Image 1: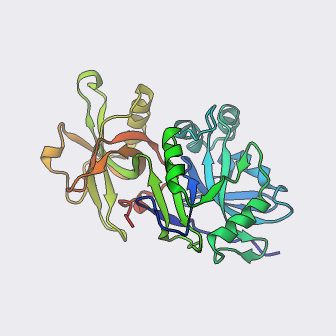
Image 2: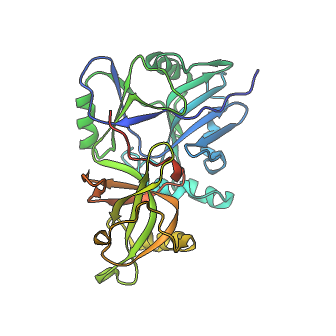
Length: 324
């Protein structure tokens, strides 16, 4: 038997809900994307190429539970709330921790579930060139469900109904995938479309401003940006001044303090009118998940709200999510 390959995850684009034929629809899960290789042990890599299996011992439950097969699986690690919905804030408590004693303690309070939505390799045979619908059929036969793993349902057509259900139950949105689509490792393809209830985007933190009023002496807003495609410079994308708790503010200050620099990371620098108070610049090494209302014509987010840090994202890969 050969060694299972390491496969880079395929990515989708953001866009409107498809209404033509030939699409399948799944719930979009709000967690940490990983590709796992299941052999005698499970190894797993995040989208920014970090080895993360030691952070999530629940993944080892896959060993011996794939009907005797070895496989490479694509999916999302989530922490579910009492209603079975993914809770990103609870996932935050797991994704940044690697010390075995802390992992063991957190695992009791915030167990993760691996939501497996694609099959990339089976035993010694790659499956990425099979159509989506065939990969899904193989996956359903392969993965035995348990409290720590599941294969989510998908449906052909009726995407609007699933989107409405996602919105009504507080979920992030849906994924639309072409029935005939191949899996394209490391590529972003319009054959997969993200349709979110509210717009969300990863953004690189390039600085912060001081708070005022009740937040005087604390962090007021994060200054965030996106890279130009193909490794271009970091462009200013506005400020994020809501969504923080007192604990979040303290954690962010601790994370940002050692990254402080005199050099503005944005090219060009933000216009003075966009900064209500003087800025403290930081090296652009942290990625935040942000919900927002819309993009302005100047390329800035409007009504941004902080959701959490993304230790699984490489800041160099953060670009404005393309539309189809």
